[in-house]
Length: 256
View (tube, rainbow, N blue to C red):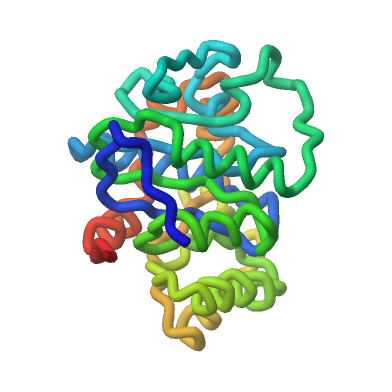
């Protein structure tokens, strides 16, 4: 059953960013998509649903322990450029403290981020999902009115198997798949500027064609961008690599 958002929230599109496995850069894609839409003048929010591995606050330079609330709900933190963020790491006294919770508690926390956080007027919310098809993805797919998902993958050989799991789960839950983003697609030679596909190429394209899902964008391996995330300065990035994905998100229809 779908849950209503907080009474003081007015949320437009809700897009989940998912992956079949961990370590493919899902949080990076979520952050860059939110930043792209914010630069286009949209009111944007990120709900960090990766409870045991939250990385969104670090990328935006947000400190733990600064979240406040009132009788109406929890107030999200706001980044330097105006992106609203809620993450379990913002509720902990130390960001390195482990979250050793069982599945039902984790799922309940994610629902609180939807039910109890005062998101205000938000054009687009991105939900950074944990990898796989476990408790939290199932809870969000069943309880939050998603308008579509973006699937993040990498160019290794096992792409079709892990992406298929996410695609099939979305189909089971009747959630539209907006498209694929391939991360770690290539590295740019610092001397000649040539794009070098160090994991090979063509695998994601072949799967996307077979599954009938658009491959929207390819992201390079970028030490500069990784450093910006490590020091909380992702909003200073000059890169605009997810323009096609942002366009697809804006074209996606709002579901009733």
